[in-house]
Length: 87
Image (tube, rainbow, N blue to C red; front, top):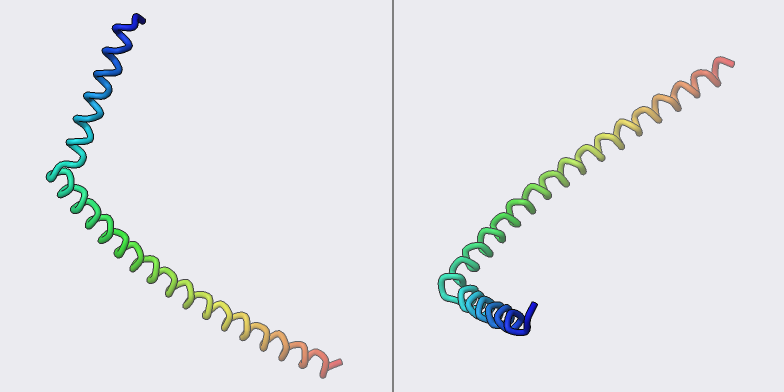
C-alpha cells in the first residue's frame, strides 16, 4: 500500500472516529443512555425480587428437610431402644 493510501486511511479513520464521538456524545444519545440505564435498573430490581423469593423457598425446603431428618432419627432411636429391650 502506498503512503498516500495509508494517509487516506488514517484521515478517514480519524474523521469516522470524530463523527462517531459526536454522535455518541450528543443530546439524543444521552437520552437513549438514560432510558437504557433506567430499564437495566428496573430489570435488576425484578431479578433481585425473584432471587429473594427463591432464597426464601430454599430456606423453607431446608427447614422441612431438617425436620424430616430429626423425625427419622427419633424413629430410628425408638426402634433401637425397642430392639435392645427385646434382647
